[in-house]
Each structure stands twice: as C-alpha cells, then as structure tokens.
Length: 330
Ligand code: SAM
Ligand code: SF4
Image 1 (cartoon, rainbow, N blue to C red):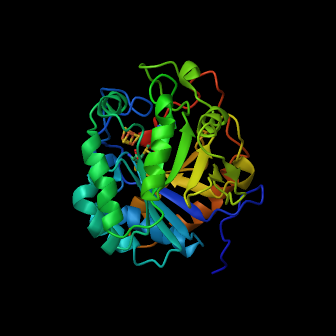
Image 2: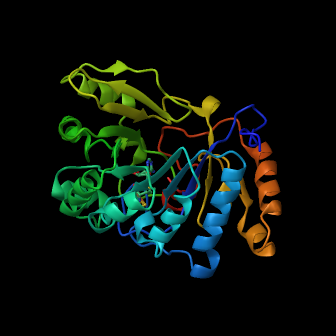
Image 3: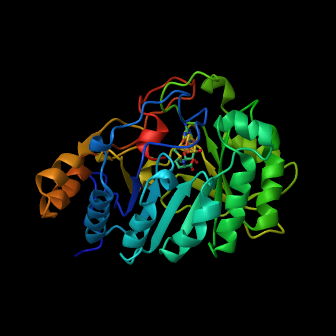
C-alpha cells in the first residue's frame, strides 16, 4: 500500500488521525463545556471494536500517527483494551490527550499497553483557580497524575494550557517554571470559538500567543525553533532548558496550508477540519458492512475531497462552530 493513500485536493497528505473515544468527561472546563451537559446515548456512539476498525482502516491507508482524545478518554470503559489493541498496529506515534485526573491509577497500564506519548491539560497551579476553570476538577489529583506519567516512563510529556485573561494569564511564569523543573514541554493555546459558553466573553478573555510570549520574555529568552511539523503549534526554546514551548494560535497564525490531520468523533463522523462543519458518516458504513472494511476504506479515501482549504475562526468571540470541543475531539 503506498504511504500517501490519503491526499486532498490541495495536495496535503493526511497521515494523522485524532479519534474521540467519548464525549463524556469528569470535568466541565468553562471553555469546553456547559455546566449542564446532555451526553450521547450508548447506541449513538462507536463501540470500542468499531473505533479499532476505523483505526485499522486509517493505518492501512498510510496513517502513521493516532491520538486518542475526547471528552476525557480515560473515563471510557474499556479504554485500556483499546490502547492495547491500537498499540499493536506499529504506529510511528501513538498518543493521548487527557485531563490527567485518572492517570494516578492508569498511567502505568497505558504505558505497558503501547501508548507512546501523553498530553496533559493543566490550566492553573492554584487549586481554587483550577477548580474555577474546570468546575469539578481537583488540582492535587492532576499533579499526582503528571508524576504517575513520569514514573511510568512516558517521555516527551506535554502540558496544554488554554490561556484566558483574568483567569490564568498571571500564572504563565509559574507554569513555565513548573514545566522547566520537570522537563515537560508546554503549549499555550488561544481559546477557540467552539460551542456557546456563558461564563466569560471569549473576545475579552482572548490572550494572544504574542502576549503570552512577551510575558515569558520578561523571564527567559525565547527562540523560535522552526521545527513546526505540519501541526498547528509553533515551537520555541529557552536558554538553560531542553523543553519546548509551543503556541497554538488559531486567531493569529493560520496553519491550514500544512494541515495533515482529520478527526473522527465518537458518533463516527469523520471531520475534515476543526473549523468547518463538513463531515462524513462512518458509523452507518461500519454498521452496514460489519464484516468487511473495504467500503469503509473507500469512504475515507473519497472524503479527502471534502477537506476544506482553511478554517474560518474570528477573534471577536463569536461562535462559528456549534459543536463543543468535547464533541469534536480536541
Ligand atoms: N479531556 C482531555 C483534555 O482536557 O486534555 C482531552 C479533550 S480536550 C477537548 C483537548 C484539548 O482541547 C484540551 O487541551 C483543552 O484544553 C482544549 N480545549 C477545549 N476547548 C477548547 C477551546 N474552546 N479552545 C481551545 N482549546 C480548547
Ligand atoms: Fe473535559 Fe477536556 Fe473538555 Fe476539560 S477540556 S471539559 S477536561 S474534555
């Protein structure tokens, strides 16, 4: 099978798939979910076997990198079995994005199951502010989860921080020192307008990557590394440390030209772009052809023609995409 089976109309090769394994979560982060959420009924979501079929089909079409996400992937029952299954596929990179709350008891099994890398979300080091952002999260549990991941032997752990003015922008220097002391990479993310939220005005809370960099530069020099590989993040380094500091800036840096990824929601919708509503139903195909993945593979190949050229986010806080991030697989 040629490596670049999946190519879109703009010549971009798609070799990275993010699979959402649940829309549920034990947190209710203000930028991601409403306080009261209605989650999908079981019949509407992909089974673990169906998620594995999707993963296998993408791998057979040249996918080299899979990330499991959600919702919170570690609250999905049987997630360790899915990790062990995908862990056998010989991927170049097999990663997960998690809020860390279940890592204390699961990090070791995830590592043994073949997961290569973890991104752990951490928006604050202050227990009260952490609770205010996540609504239900407990900081000590997440800090313990980060330690458990390090003890389990995960390398290149990356922290993800969504920066919001008035909520956690003052903690940027502390988060940098936390990451430096533990040899963890850290990426600062501009909040994206996904789903209607009520707790703050996104337009006012937006803290641009440029603003974050100028705060960090009050303490450390930052040098752009240039090793920005197809993803949305731009990476920098600081003297006296090996860690990378990344910036995801959907408002101020358009990364669409090198986009190499697609997403599959837990409802089995193949999303060609985070910032557009285009999608292709894979659930129907999976269930119509339970014993044969050929139609599934053809559907995936054809879907590449729908991948749009670019996203259309604006920075005034207006919602342009009605899906919440937990539905999208962030
Ligand atoms: N529950 C896991 C977690 O929090 O890491 C994985 C799913 S979460 C949707 C993935 C990432 O998306 C997290 O780092 C989260 O901070 C980020 N995120 C969620 N909503 C966002 C938004 N509106 N703008 C920017 N990032 C967002
Ligand atoms: Fe849950 Fe992650 Fe969304 Fe927070 S960002 S509510 S942890 S899915």
